[in-house]
Amino acid sequence: MTLKTKIIAEDGKQDLLITREFDLPLDLLFRAYVEPDLVAQWMGTNVLKLDNRNHGSWQFETTDAQGNVVFRANGVIHEFVPNRKITRTFEIETTSFPVQLEFLEFESLSDHTSKLTMQIVFKSVAHRDQMLQLPFAQGLNMAHNRLQNLVSPLN
Image 1 (cartoon, rainbow, N blue to C red):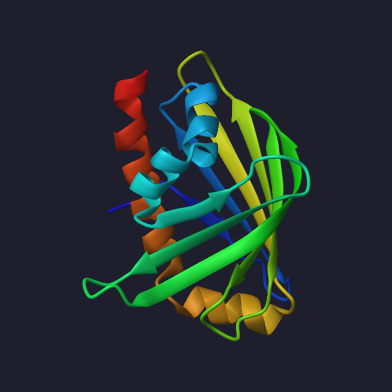
Image 2: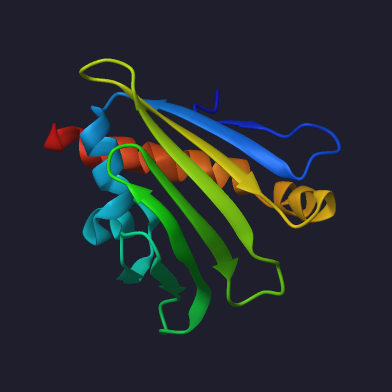
């Protein structure tokens, strides 16, 4: 199965370039990233906070069936331009993994299609490579597929 979300990791660099084209108009793709109910559904997590504005912040948490926290992440939103871009930090609270910087850019390709480009900058090449050893690509593809399927009926 071909992965629709493409991840480019150049040797010796401490960033990832991620692209995905969606069969969604730009405004729906952007909504999927900024509306807490939609984010919770396609990411499969609880949205504890999502303050979409310059200098805002966010916090997500995933729990197991017994209510134990298995994943908690947070960050600061440094730049927020509706339907264009979000620049934010990403920190996983339950690990010693360092903070990442994420640049999300949203682009209209046609009235019914759009593109997300993400650049994720890691503290080091080693940290980036550590992330790539996890099932990161498969997980991101699955999440983006859920996003597409969830938001399509809203069109």
